[in-house]
Length: 107
Image 1 (tube, rainbow, N blue to C red):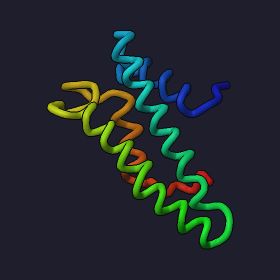
Image 2 (cartoon, one colour):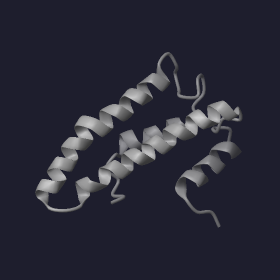
Image 3 (cartoon, rainbow, N blue to C red):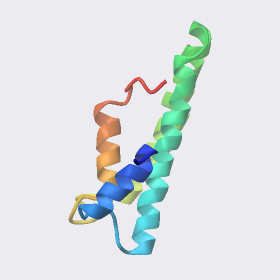
Image 4 (cartoon, one colour):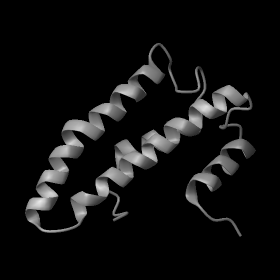
């Protein structure tokens, strides 16, 4: 049995050719997948506490965390069709999942 969604995604990505075999490219992919996990973590306060806590947490997410992540992700994608270059890799799937369903009820 497998546990931890990121580890399972890496396993499936490697098995089906969506995880980089080059160690440097794999680290780049993993670092942005981890940054996306951090972004999800930064969403957590928007779902906890009273209305004012949620409001200020949303503003912080909107004004700081999301722009910071998007800036980093834009730099990684610059001049490429996919994060992996000509072919999609694991990061493309993670970012696609986030951008199509950012409020997925994790918290």
